[in-house]
Length: 263
Ligand code: ATP
Image 1 (cartoon, rainbow, N blue to C red):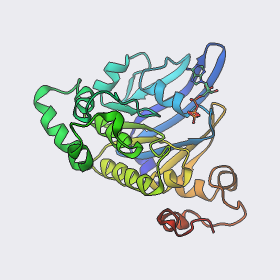
Image 2 (cartoon, rainbow, N blue to C red):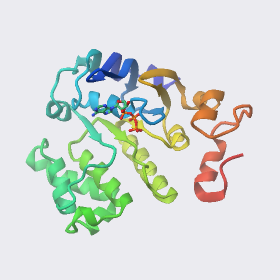
Image 3 (spheres, rainbow, N blue to C red):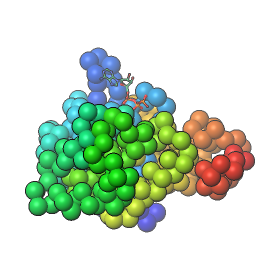
Image 4 (tube, rainbow, N blue to C red):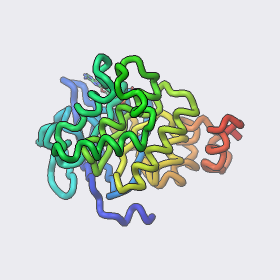
């Protein structure tokens, strides 16, 4: 409830996106408050990545409105949106495998004034000490978890106020998922709002204040994470839990330590 009273930093209304004749989003509405973590859940192909790509200016909307900090940014170019404080970590991470870790981070800093770069690098290294250790290493030789850290570190080089994260847990072992999610929590504690797309609904609902569920390009459910976690439809479709049992995410943290989350 507290989170919902904050002014919306990102406000999407009636968002419609098509790839050729194929509609990927149909009237999507969602908000992210300043400093809030909001998750966007849904099956493969439901339009989660398209939502993030449209916010970050990589895909043009056919209709609807995207307001960031009260301004309609739906026609802004991707560069201008980054400069305004929105940073996107795409699914698959999109790092430059032949560049060093350091050069990948510096590429991320292209919109930041030169004197800020050393401070931004220090901040990224403080969050992910392994990136400092490996700064001269080719990024393509990093493990999947380290590449995800690099992708997030690179996104932070622009000093975002809103971070769009697409499937940060994809392909990672449970220990690394916990590590990445703990870092997202720390980033958020420093005031950065997060819109988190995740297949790992349990982890996402345990982290986020609120969530939205997409099905074939439409929002079919929304609410606080606690409410979504006990919604029978969500439990059955996304959490793999018995819809008739009332417990929320109480088992989640136990489960992520490998002690058996599913009641
Ligand atoms: P996933 O978890 O599999 O990435 P998603 O929920 O992120 O799924 P999107 O990638 O946004 O879903 O895709 C939404 C719909 O748009 C799907 O039907 C997909 O096939 C289609 N789509 C996505 N990108 C393109 C593209 N570049 N060209 C054509 N169709 C696309």
